[in-house]
Image 1 (cartoon, rainbow, N blue to C red):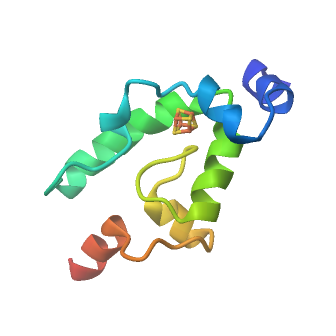
Image 2: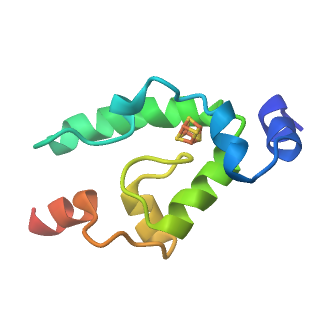
Length: 101
Ligand code: SF4
């Protein structure tokens, strides 16, 4: 079991998971700026995903975003990833852009 997996087991999954977030102070990586181009979005989300991969609260974070149909990149998942997992937001930006193209 990796240290990340171990911490996911040890850290409680209530609201206090946010106290252990690896993304504190890095909000710009996790939410799209206005008029973000698809290529820039892919680069931003790849950076976010690298941070999520080392985050000890990835599992409760992902569950929270799925349950609340959040926008942005949470727990290693984009809006499109959550859509494909059955947790669609009302107007997923990445999916809408791909359908228009
Ligand atoms: S899994 Fe990613 S989005 Fe969630 S708290 Fe950790 S770094 Fe932030």
